Length: 152
Image (tube, rainbow, N blue to C red; front, side, top):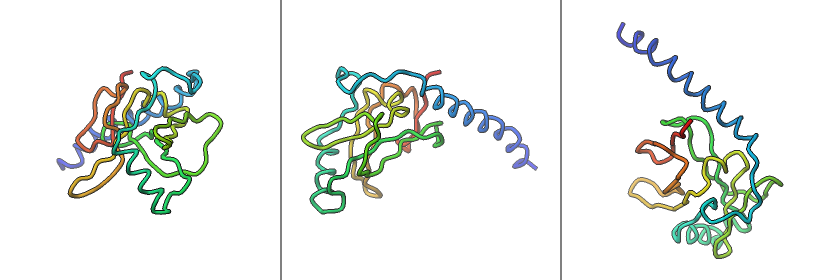
């Protein structure tokens, strides 16, 4: 009985939050993205650990010639979540950030949510992963470090 009541209360909230986040993602397409020569406050930065790990992957032959791609998707604990993957191609509207010969690619829609952010590589007891260490566009997040909220 209590579980069904809890579902009736929480489900509309979760559904409205997902719809709101999808609206934010689709309306961000309308924003004009400036050319890649943007000031450093709008660049996406990479830490030494991030650059080191991408180089290690390239040296192992696993990702030779590949780029680290950062994307923002709806979902996660707080509404949006970061997604990382190794990619071997770029699109014409991608933003490419380079440090010491290592490249990070962010698609046009995701860029609005991560400009000024810092990407890091962390190694913990239970996992090793790329993470967004700092994101000035995020107004909140959760302890998973892979999801965040934005100001409306």
